[in-house]
Image 1 (cartoon, rainbow, N blue to C red):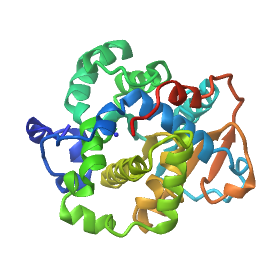
Image 2 (cartoon, rainbow, N blue to C red):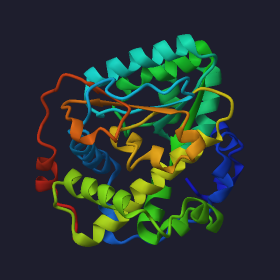
Image 3 (spheres, rainbow, N blue to C red):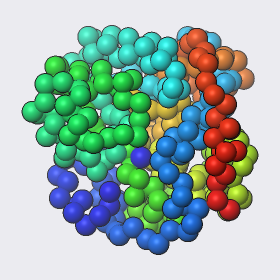
Length: 314
């Protein structure tokens, strides 16, 4: 959510299940503009928390749309910092695991370049803390996601690192899609002719998610970064054949009108069910999710205070 030369050696589950893995080029990290260099991962995550709060604040009531018969792909969203949503989603995942034989769980929280270390850790560790120690991951509130790691250990479930790396993201933001995706992948997903409604939604989310404090020149690159991640996660989902697929990601990433779902083929969309976990529900965004689970709100500091204290560089 890296492409250094040694990443060519990743004959891992992440590439094995993702048909468009060959659509990514291996390249060195380019020189970055000052503001990209200073956009640290925690602030990006905080910005997307605010963005997803904005995107998900207008959602339909649970079960207001017909349930797709026999879905194979489940895109399960979240508000990253809301434990109530995490608990409700975990219950659904446990239900799916009981009903579906050996599903594959793909996670936004795991960058694709961690797949070899992830596979090794899952093969040798007895608990989630051991896995996290091997991965050295610090970017997420991992207490929310440890249950998925433990499930993978205890039930031998395939776990896929479904996000682009931070290096990938910076490449896309500074040089465009062609810095990471091959011409074939760009043509396949039509990344040079992005749908205007999708682009508008992503732009609005980025602006509002950063409290309308981003400099104008930063918005386009950050939108590209979000889209690049959605495309990659869609390629991972579509590359998993003949298995139930569960994607764990933010509400903004699973939206049907702007997220991963929008990049799935029509055949895969027909097999997909989308769940969001939201703090407010309205029918005005009924097209965004198949099911919007209303969860109790939590007390949180205004995310905008962070950007006001530490402005994004111009």
